[in-house]
Length: 170
Image (cartoon, rainbow, N blue to C red; front, side, top):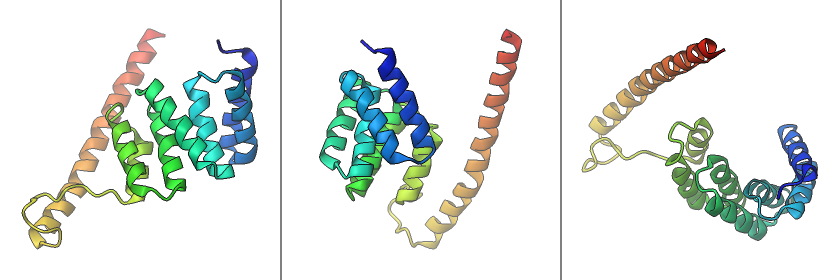
């Protein structure tokens, strides 16, 4: 059962995290987690902050992994676990976890940005040709420049339709 105190501690931790005060955020998440050790959200954030701030990689991996297993459909837990892997210098593990998170939210911008930052590369357009082959290079550049703008237009349209629907409901 979640007590009001643990909820407040967690909210406070999120505010500290937004303000980039990881020390205070870790302490707030720790208090929330100690009050409700079965809450996956508290596990995930406390584990991530403990690893990032105090270097408690083992604790971070354990708590974040438990949170992902408990509520596998929440992509923020995958992001937190990936941050722990990055802290542990395990780039491959972080990329694997982020790709699993994309299964539940394929349009998650944070995950896409992290994958790009980590250097994730897509398969070459024509697999039997090498990456350095001029045909693969040209097609890769062409698709990279045309498809994202097309996808952005679709996302903007979806967002506009959703906003109109929300306005009509009110």
